Length: 386
Length: 169
Image (cartoon, rainbow over all chains, first blue to last red; front, top):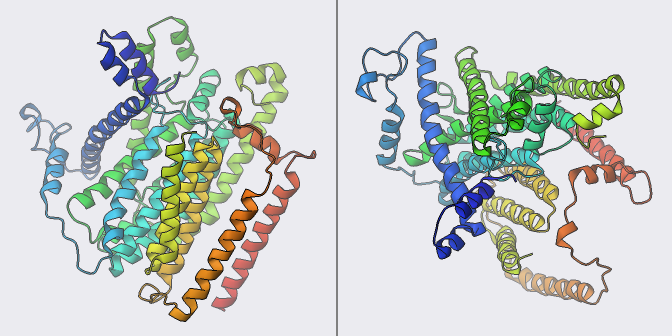
């Protein structure tokens, strides 16, 4: 059965616990809280690691060394690649201890709620991410659509930040960010429709299971993959689409008036969103936790314990996600920042037609597959998609 | 369906709706509207209409509330204006609202609704079934309304582009 809560329930039923404790621990609410705690713990460590990784990679691309001094002493001086591992932890502590300066004329409720909503939306996306077979918090039947809905909540939070800060830089940054995000949501939806069409389901685990039976969905949907990566970069305000936070044009865009912990929340939400986009791209296009050429099916049939199978699947999934994260970080220092009119042109006039073409190619592929391989094989591989 | 959970979500809906109507700052009213939409999506989720709940958030919160906020942000000085209704208008408005509420509640409670019994085991309609209903050409199908809504949206889009381009030139 899918879900961390079922896994924890099975675990608690197997451990030798006094009955009252077991009754308490297997309540639905407690299981949900434990799953959420697991996800939040994962996100904390993940974001620390990603920020360090980003700084190291940016540094190496620019022929400098990046953070070198904070961290375990055996990694400190000679090692260019792994020095400064705990730099982000130090930065986080610094941000936590900074004074939160609230300007006088801000709309207080809106100002304070905005980073909470942005971070909450980012957290909500982790519910459907398939870390492994039977290892997602809750595999919703409308998983893909849920991710898009949660992305729209981020738009709301950024608008609140832009308006509530009562400053012209914030307002402009907020408006630009919202225009960018809603313009690039549509190519993203159409790019995602290719794999959804091929799998016949909106549930992420089921999309991965169909890819396990057939090839990765990137091959017929290569245009869609590229469109998704570009649109995802724009959705999360990553460079080269970081005009809303443009440091040279708008001071800091919609985060100008935020300091300390509130700034940290926006920053964390950006990296967390980057991971979500990479994870979704890995799940939809690169086969998620499954390995190609039937290796996963062999592993499943070999009778290894299910926990080991899930763990291996999680390792595969995280590796693929890390590859895409590295691509996103690489792109940051490869392209110059996109101007706002170029951004709108590109989104509506280039990406959108390409995403339509991708949907067409995916549909033609499905029809051709059915004609060539016959209806029986088609039904067996693509499930109930008839 | 847990009645306490439903009452809690309904309280949030009512709180949001009251916030929309009674808020003096129009941006706060827009935010309350987004909260109302979100809570209604929660009610849809409780009724096992998962697709509808997610689409409600995607469209209402993600698009309509954002458009409203855009209109507020791009209109000068609208944030400083406070909607004032003179007291001589408030009392007739209250009477009108109460009359309408009474009429609506009377109509709802004295109607015999043809309801099917709630069967939690079979209450979930999958997206595939929804898709088949949308494209169904038989009597219970929604193909014709679906296409008509598409044409309507296209007309609205073309009209908006025409109005916007006329204003520029």
